[in-house]
Image (cartoon, helix red, strand yellow):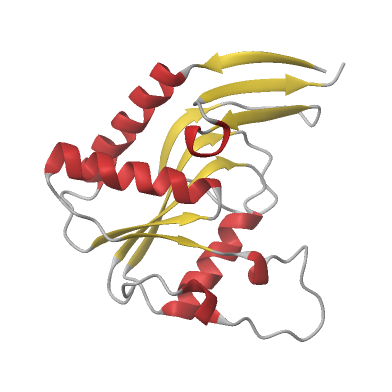
Amino acid sequence: MSERILMDEWAIARMLTRLAHELVEHNKGTEDLCVIGIRRRGEFVARRIAALVKKLYGADLPCAGIDIGMYRDDLVSGFFVPDASVNDLGFSVDGKRVVLCDDVLHTGRSVRAAIEAIFDLGRPARIELLVLCDRGGRELPVSPDLVGKNIPTSHREWLDLRLREIEGADSLGIRSEH
């Protein structure tokens, strides 16, 4: 297996800053915006985006992580009623413009699960999707509104996005089987 580095810490910082600007521009401001990240890595992306919006625009966006474990269609079988109380965000999503964040978008199944979890918490006015990397390969009709980098991959390639909160430093690599 070989790996090639596509982005270093500096490039990822620039990408996040650009996404924060695009988010505010796309929404014509920050009114009624909240940021929710898909746990675990998407939550760190959401927190960084919210911090950058605060730094760049002075707006304090509500921000939280959402656990999609109970909503995964590849893990749940039979009759199961999700317990929305595990996702107490600390704020209401009713009438809000929710920015759903994740690190890497691939099949769309995690996004579908997150949307279902959000609707169990309330009725947002809108849900937008922000991802750092889009690698293609959809199994569901999911399309991001804001993308840091499009990196199409084959079924023999994987994106390896490292975040400083987990691995100690930011980088983006691509691994492939020979």
